[in-house]
Amino acid sequence: MVKSVAHKAQSTNPHLKGGYTQQEPVPGTIPRGYVPLHFGASEEGLVRAGKELINPFAEDAEVDVARGKVVYANFCLVCHGAGGKGDGTVTKRGYPPPTSLLLAQAIDRSDGQMFHIITYGFKNMPPYASQVDLEDRWHAINYVRELQRSAVGNDADGENAPEGEGEL
Image (cartoon, rainbow, N blue to C red; front, side):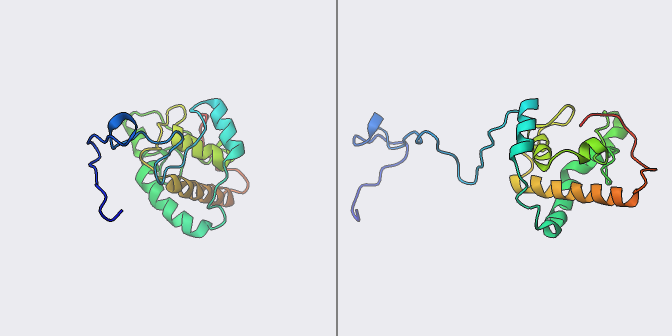
């Protein structure tokens, strides 16, 4: 082993199958750090994600809300607005307003469904899987839940419920 020949990755190698040093990965191999999600970008996938995905950071919400606020400010604020009402800056430029995250239909969504929506997109919302890290998606959800709790807490009688009839 100490004096074994080191073959370059792209070179020929008579000792290996196919004659090349670089080999195809074993079937089922996934990249380091990649977590496969077995849900499609469909209504069925959304429903399944709602039942099967559980927020791994739900218990330690204080730290996650702080990180979630940063993620929300970087990726969500321009559409959903600072308070989550769907009044972000892009709506002032003619883009259709997203559904308010403070509506009952958004509050009733499970964390798994929200994760699926961030990952695969839904209706007018594009997918953010390539922009937002897997853990940061959960942190953003925790921050949205905090926005929802504070909105419900400030409006216990429902008089100032956000307007909008869009679907989430």
